[in-house]
Image (cartoon, rainbow, N blue to C red):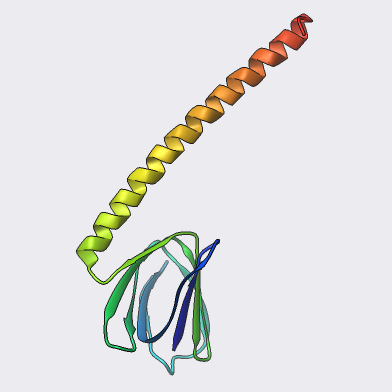
Length: 130
């Protein structure tokens, strides 16, 4: 099977795999090469796959869509991180969330300053000072 994991800005994974395990809203499921074609809404969690060389790879994924069509499995998600070590993957995810939290905190602060500036200018217009 050919697994492609698509992020909004790049193709994150594009490789031959022998099996896939993923999590949908109603639980985990597995896909082997002759699995019937289907579509599944993925829940945030771990997607694992076995490469053609026999290596097991773990990938943390955000919610997304998985489409199995013929020999192709396409996964579309906003965020994904991978590692062949589950413990290392957890560390990577925690670091990424901390970075996102810091970025969101800065973005909220900048937005609050913009809103305050907008209100100040609006009040000046109302008072006829501009």
